[in-house]
Image 1 (cartoon, rainbow, N blue to C red):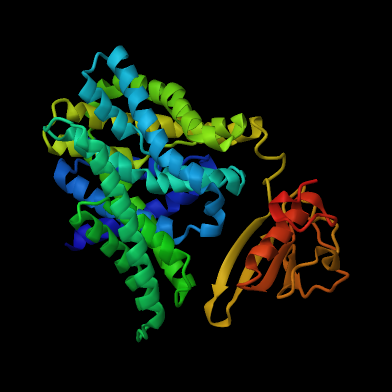
Image 2 (tube, helix red, strand yellow):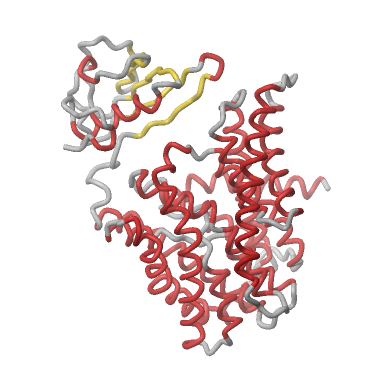
Length: 490
């Protein structure tokens, strides 16, 4: 037991250090975590681990916690404008992707239709951890990040239902769409109900320690998954919706809760990817390279673009943004975990699917992850320089009903040269500190902002959005920017 704890702690520390390395390399950290698991496995250090059932169970627990962190840290005001497109990408796009991928695999690899549909379903789910570990440094705006964030949080639910239906030995009848509709609707309602009830209960509770509030919040989200599963509804959708509701409610010690959830999400991602790397057998992966590359080509070059086109058609999304969204559909741990479902149920050829998905996740992560920043610049979705828009981070002051905004003025920002009095922040907000170089000082109305300055802005909760909009507007259009925030373009 002592040895196990020591190895686990060492792997965790190594994985945390790997996050910084992955950022420098421009790759999602999941690749390094998978690599650590492979090194620990049978091919190198010789740890034998072949329990598919346990891997799937632990993988499901990790996905629940990852979705919890994703929902709690998603700001509704940021994703609300993209709600329609996000839902379409999570439903319509999934169906089109499954159908087109299955058709390609049926023609190119001579698979029977049910097997081809199963492959298409497993491969159709994007991974939130993979998507945002790459998008974090690309510099695109919320208009693109919003739908991708919703898609990665919601599409696990319909994909899971499709995989379970296709992996079952029973024939698929006309009732299957009705069953999927019930599970999605019921999962949504359960998530909304438990999220609202959990928010009300936490606000009224008088817990004896601050650290109990984050635990109680996560427990409510996990309870939503359990309630959804027991009601034969979508537990994945229930946990994400409940976390989204709780994350946007006025929770006691909200900042502590979000920090705890973020740490728990990182721990779940590290554990899941290392576990999947440990389960993989490098000796079998070579035989899966050809089918993996064929499936990946059909998915990335045909199925994903067509599915995005169908989902985005009613929303008049510009073609440049459609191309970026298509290329941003990264695969991660979710397809590997879902591929274990047919393996556990004894579906013929399921081991080949697991190995092919593992190879495909690695290949697509390298190819798409390294080229996504270049693609965003080529499509003119980011401007030259370090970032598209000013970076704003916040730290909530719950008891005061206020927040701190840390603003970094990037190179090329129109904030450069603006006097503080010309910033014209809304009443209820003010710049309390400017850090220039290695020195900080209290600014005056005549203080002139410069590139690379860091500002500490204090504002009330009520004017938080207006303050951010004003800062971003001046960042883009200068001192004469209009007050419409993102609409305040030159």
